[in-house]
Amino acid sequence: MDLFELIVSKAAEIAWGPVTIVLLVGTGIYLSFGTRFVQFRKMGVAFKSLFKKGEGDGDITPFQALMTSLAATIGTGNIAGVASAIAYGGPGAVFWMWVSGAVGGATKYSEALLAIKYRVTNEKGEKSGGPMYYIGRGIKDRYGVNANWLGFLFAIFGFIASFGIGNMTQANSISQSLNVTFGIEETVSGIIIAIFTALIIIGGIKSIGKVTEKLVPFMSLMYITGSLIAIFSNIGMIPHAFEMIFTNAFTGKAVGGGLLGTVVRLGIARGLFSNEAGLGSAPIAHAASKNNDPITEGIVGSLGSFIDTLVICTMTAIVILTSGIVTIDGAGVMQIEGNLEGAALTTASFEKLLPGFGGYIVAIGLMFFAFSTIIGWYYYGSKCIEYIFGLKSVKVYKWVWVAISFVGATIPLQIVWDISDVFNGFMAMPNLVGLLALSPMIFEMTREYDKKTAIEKNILVGQLAATASKK
Image 1: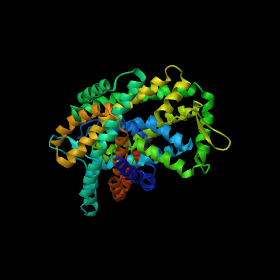
Image 2: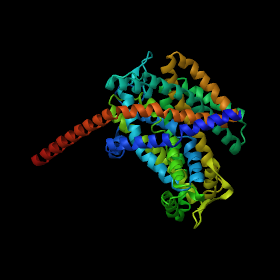
Image 3: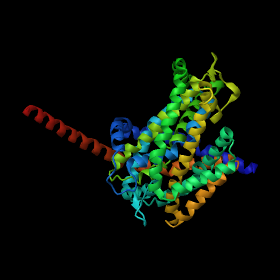
Image 4: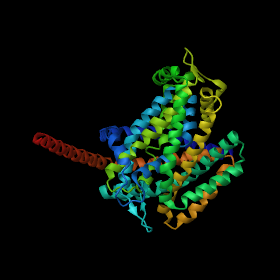
């Protein structure tokens, strides 16, 4: 087992090593400049388009598509992952987490755009799309090169990752939280998780969409509200929290004497791990949207990184840094009360700011976040296995998924976490190839959209001026 764990550890270093991180954030920067930072320019359009019912050929509304993608990405990383980045990299890691979230919006835009452009209709009349489709079909369409094997590779990685990062580890987080907070046995938690999972996924994407459109806004607003109450309970610490973030991000060394590269790497890696920009998971959900316009769906998709990283992850970070549990002395050495990390650090921070019930905010938030990930990632995994083995395989996968959620809740899972990290990271490689290869087309479509909207705006202004002159 030691040898196996060593192999997994080395594979994780490759999957989430400097090369992968540079490629992910580099692609985000490249796509941001190529689209003229569409994720910020069109944020107003994104929110307007988000609440349209959708008149395309898909299965769920654009809002449900975004909520399904957020259900899968808003998870334990938003609570435990942010705390770990601060514990090992210092407060400056938060700044680099913001950087990954900011440029990740362009990546999400591009992924959702391609998902709509190259989606297909399966035998049930449902839409199927994502990297496994746009890699093969897109590269063949533009360059005449058969890249189906890359799409197949992505589907394999996504299928394997779904059981770990999307199911077992999340179920385990829920059962552990319920046990610590409420004294509920892991077996009981496992049964409850399995039952609720089955009730939701049995109806497919339409059922998942109906649940996520209610669950994700509720759990997000609950966590954000709780976080704001905690932060403003110690309002005087807010300026100091931001000072720690910005100072530590550029001091040239991490707290405790590590290199600045550690701060940058941990911040960017945690942001990317949380919002999954570039991993290729979110476009699978966006492919089901009732939207035949790739550009507008891409604009809606760009909100994913903003909501996940720049809003929810930031809430966790500021709570931790205003609690006083994390301090940095004059020599730049960080101290954390009790040497806490992960979810324990977040829980202690909430509890210190809101004694008596702060810990419940984390516990309940963690349960909702983790469960939403289970149902969101079920859809991702089902589309990956559909691509590999055909539609009939999804029926078997559905019940295996329910059983695995029970198993995950009842057994120790450190090795599963490690294996999940590996395949979650490996998903990015074929997806980034597809994004970079198809980037000229993404830029062309974006420029055409900008020209079209500019012309429409000028016409509207002219019409308003003419109407005003008549009056």
